[in-house]
Structures are given as structure tokens and as C-alpha cells.
Image 1 (cartoon, rainbow, N blue to C red):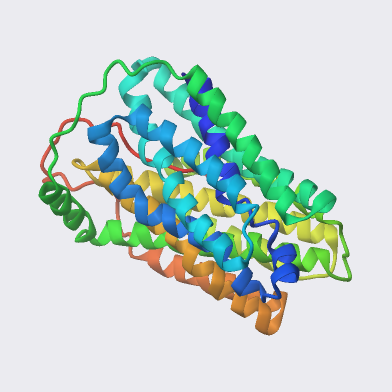
Image 2: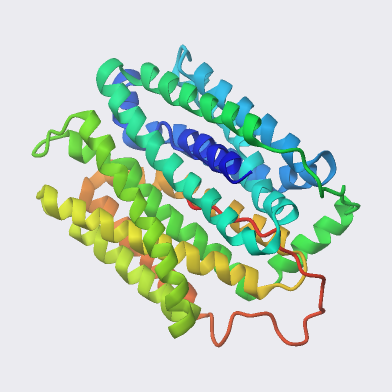
Length: 399
């Protein structure tokens, strides 16, 4: 079971950002500015953001394993099909549909593990799933970078699509039958009430905004750094640019460190620290020095994942009822950050170069610091909150 969810995580997150490394190639092929090319990433994360709550409800009735299976196979096939898009508009449409399909895994995986894995083994099972997310995100960027250098963007999308399809097959073969799933009786009206309750909480609203802002900054840098590294004075090959994104793994370590830091100094101070580290990393990428750019990207990636980890964990602490829905709202806001922030960051980059992109990131991190300042005291649920039965179906994403 653990390996099945690891394979599913690899499959999903390899495809989610499959076109990110390819943006300069898409700009050349379709005569697009960076902000326009980035729509191929934004529509996928936007589709996922829109679908994550409805799909999580579908899994409550239809079954988690069934939803995950349909999700990974449909998304992989759509990924291969996207390689044959005759024009950019068709590519964008296919990527948007793929985003909806991809929502099936992040919307249900944590709930599935909580139902099917014994308590003592749950932590390691979830850790392996999150590792699959991180490795999938990195592998997708590496594969597309190398394949694009060899045969262009179409070959790259076929390659990552086949990789994801192979992972989907492994997932289906390794996934045992569900033993503990019980269909939910939650009605649409009750769901709406729970969502409204969460959105009425000012602390949760701040946490959702923090996830959105951190992701907008991260997406801006990862979307457009490739343009800078391919151009002079760097002039790197596409394969090397893709390989640089192995830095993505820095997030695995900073996420764990963030949890320890929260225990020592609290969520607000941790979020301030993460915003400052992210901003410092962005500044380090300004000089035309490859070593400094790489160091800056490592620092920025570590800061982003620390902020994301602190904000998402605070969501789970804040609520006593409807934790799955609270975390689904966080995921929606998080991926909307990529969808909305990416194109805006692209306009800044297109207008004033890399300096404009960095200034945009700094503005976002200043916003994050201001939003975090409103998290006065503890983020945990008030003592007067109604007690609900334990809910271990929190949703999280490492990508």
C-alpha cells in the first residue's frame, strides 16, 4: 500500500508541472511572451484547485481507491494526448482538464491512508506518500528538461506522460482492496455549512492567504528562471536547466525543520522566518553568477516549503470539526496562488526582466509577513469550540 501511494504521488506531481521547464520552448514555438506561456501551468493548478473539494466529496460516496485510480490513469493519458495538441489553445484546454483529473489524488490520498493504515504505521505511510509527491515534482522537471533538449516539447510531454502512466500501472497493481471505507452521509447543504464556517474564521482566512501568497512567489521563480538561465550570460542547455530543479528536494528537509521550529517559536514567528528566508533567496538570484543563482534557489525553496508546512499544519490545529474540508480549502487557495501569481509574475518579468520578478516576490513576502502578523497568540482552536470526533483525513501536498 505504501509503495502504491508513493507511485501515485510520483505520477500526479510529475504531470502537474510538466510544462514548467518547457515554458521557453513553448514561447518560441507559439510566439508567446512568458506570462502567456505560463498559462499552460496555471490552468492545470487552477483546475486542480477548483476540483479538489468536489472530488473529495465524490470520494466520500464512490470510494477513495476508485477515485484515485481513475484520476491517475485519466491524467496520464491526457498528458500524452497534450503532446499532440495542434496549437497552444488546445494544449491549454487539455492541461485544464488534466488539472481536474489530477485533483483525485491530493483530494483523497490522506483520507485513504487514515482509513486503511494502522495507527503506528500511519506516519511512515504518509511520509512515503509525501516523498512521492516531492520526487514526482522533481522527476517531471528533470525528464521534461532532458527530453526537450533531445526532441522538443512534444517529445518531453510524451516522455513524462509515459512515465506517469507507468507509475499509474504500478499504483493499480500494488494497491490492495479497500477494507474500511464507509460511504459518507454528508449532504451538500451540510458541506456548504462547514465550508462557510471555515471561511468565517479570520485565522483560517489568514492561513489560506498565506498558502496562496507563498505559492505565488514560488511559482513565479520556478516558472521564469528557466528563461533567464537559457539566455545570456548563462546560455545553459535545456537539460542542464531542468537538472537544476533537483533543488526542489531542499523542500523535503526544510518542511521537517519547519515543524521543529514551530514547536520552539510558534507559527507566527516561523512564518515570518520563512518569508524572510524566501525573500533572501530571491535577492541572491539577482547577480549574473550561476553559483549565487543556485544558492539563492536553494534558499528560496527551503523558505517556501517551511512556510507552506507551517501554514498547512496550522490549519489542522485550528479546527476541531471538518478538518478534511478545512485542509481542502487550504489546498484550493494554495494552488490558486500558482494559477494567479504565475501570470502576474510573468508580466513583471516580461516588463522589467528578472529584477521585476524578484521585486514581485519581495512584495509577496512582505504581504506574507503582514498577514502572519495578524496571527496573534496560538492558532489552535478556541477551548470553546465544539468537540468533534477525531478526523485524520487532513489533506496536504508537498508540491
